[in-house]
Length: 84
Image (cartoon, rainbow, N blue to C red):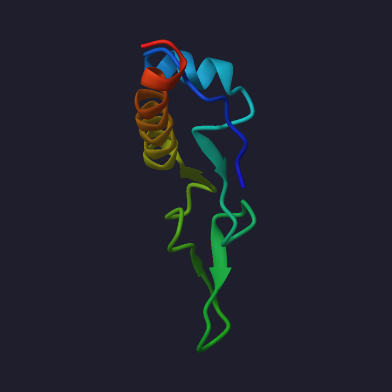
């Protein structure tokens, strides 16, 4: 699981990413191991990877945005308990 810093103040998504330097917007595609191609299940021929569309990397922005939103929601719930 991805470890992340709990955001207790409202910082931008970009600032949150800067704090969580280990989180990457793009990562090597797990499906094709970064080659851009996969072997067809039925015939064994090499074809463009369906996960990354041959780009060799996958975009994690939506996942990171969801993590950021979850952390903001947790922080909002905690705020009255710690100083709000």
